[in-house]
Length: 149
Image (cartoon, rainbow, N blue to C red):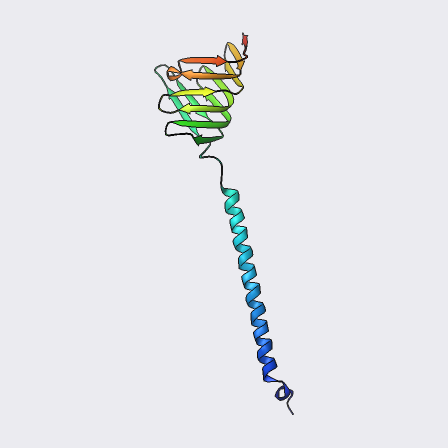
């Protein structure tokens, strides 16, 4: 006689349902893992900066001062907080610092962090600076060291 005729039909249905249920559980588990990986990746891609590598310029009649930074955040419609390796560069000088508040409308900049001014004839390190009058006035604050050549 045939062996398959002796197998209980209820047992076959039960084993089929059990295998289907296990298969569904594995598929659902894999989907949940994929969703959590996608969520982790999207959370890691969110940044605390509004602008990546911002670039601005202060224009006046005699020169242009170019401003670059690693990161930037909008404080309001006109003011931008520039962070990480902020540089002011013109044909005559350069200033390096870490944090600057730049007003795009008034063309002014203010820093309260250690700053290094370099020109052909002078080097100034200070605790901060203020640029106004479209780059014509630069005022250094705090403890400052001046080296003249």
